[in-house]
Amino acid sequence: MSKANDEHITYVDTYGFKIPEEESKRRLEEIHTEEHKVKIRKENERVKKWLFMLEHEQQFFHGNRKSKLKARIRKGIPNAVRGRVWKRLVGVDEAMKANPKYYHQLLEKTPGEPWKSTIDKDLDRTFPNHCLFYDVKFLGFDNFFCF
Image 1 (cartoon, rainbow, N blue to C red):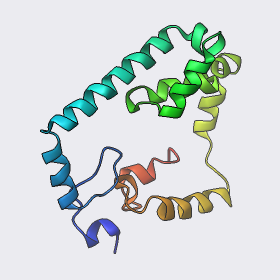
Image 2: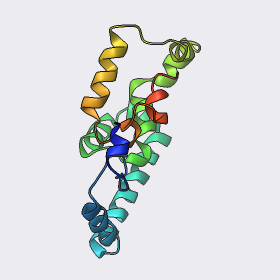
Image 3: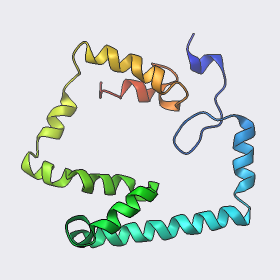
Image 4: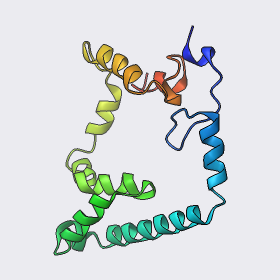
């Protein structure tokens, strides 16, 4: 019997991980507090700063303000811009320009053994409480390797 059939999963966090009903209720109650509003304002200010750095990429990623970039990375990259920042940090755009078809070629490939079986085992061990991997028949698991 699959995990999804063993229990009724209702509550998940922002990242898709199962949380207890009590935790979900606590988080919903927290939303209306002044402390939460302050936290959201602070997060929004951090996002604005990161957007500014992305718009002025030459100064922060390549120029004389790299120390500011390092300091902000150490504080954490906000979820709202994390994907864009990491793409910039690892040079995805440059790599895609250098070899534009490579990414799509990788998407077409199916991982060979022993890699596929190792990944299948690791997903269940690493993410047992993630909504995409509750059941191997669930959409997320089947599409993990673009089958």
